[in-house]
Length: 186
Image 1 (tube, rainbow, N blue to C red):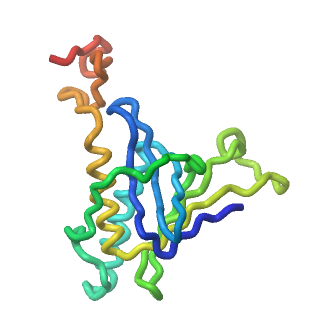
Image 2 (spheres, rainbow, N blue to C red):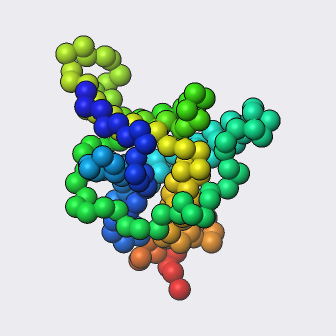
């Protein structure tokens, strides 16, 4: 199992390539003269950002406000830059995990490669090659900055339908609130 470990990375961001409605989403870590890029779905970016915020809020709550966790993303850590080029996907993300390391006061994010076995069957094959893993250790402040960028990235997609909230396609969409009739954008 290849493990792409960054402790800490010089940069860890979520990014997308393409036009809204047909974007490809990535996590990218850079450090120690290398770049690791993994592909994932838009909803995975959104869930990761939400869970990171929840984790940090819980750490702050349990510590009584003494943990080194900022309530908001520090402005100086905002990363508005594009993904590093070339964008060569090392693997597609299947599952992700988050943890708080109290010894280092860091968030540990793991993104595990999706395997054919996970998609087809839940039985464990001892002879199957192990999945690749991207493991990133970042400060709480860097995690808040990651979350802010990720949420902005997700929100920058197609505008929602004012009736059903589903993303609008360029040619309109089938709106469930209109009983299946095509709603056109004006």
